[in-house]
Length: 177
Figure 1 (cartoon, helix red, strand yellow):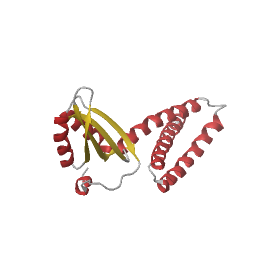
Figure 2 (tube, rainbow, N blue to C red; figure 1 turned 60 degrees about the vertical axis):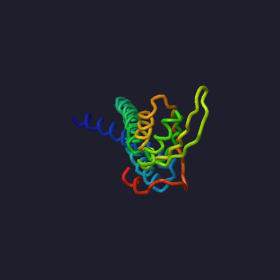
Figure 3 (tube, rainbow, N blue to C red; figure 1 turned 180 degrees about the vertical axis):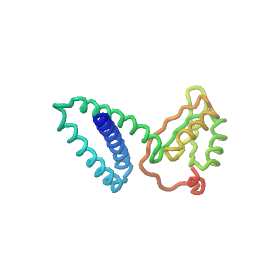
Figure 4 (cartoon, rainbow, N blue to C red; figure 1 turned 120 degrees about the vertical axis):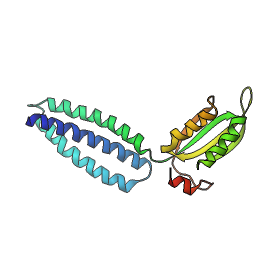
């Protein structure tokens, strides 16, 4: 029973460590260096103790190395889920819609608290409208769903942005999002 507990401890410690590493990378990329540094400390601390336990016993208990590797894979998976849940940052959504849909859609998006800029555009066969929408990354699904409800044929491109200044975005509505 003690060996099973040790395997579980190695596995879940490794999952936790790799998940923390994923979160640390996100924070560094988004400019949260101090918070990332604290996570780096915890990540390194876990790694030192778990890796030493595994490496010290590899010759007599090679299964620990396999459990350690499985924990790494589990941590990558858990980290990817964590990244989607946290969804830090802002996005720029560019949508090319029909001209008719675009005007009404811009109004609805603005009423929902999203910053929207519209541009007249020309497609291959018809006049189009380009909507440029700024939103929190966590709201990407809401924005794209609203666009597709108005125009199922819309072309949508989404980009992460590192900063945004100026313009008009309703601060009250952003508080409730």
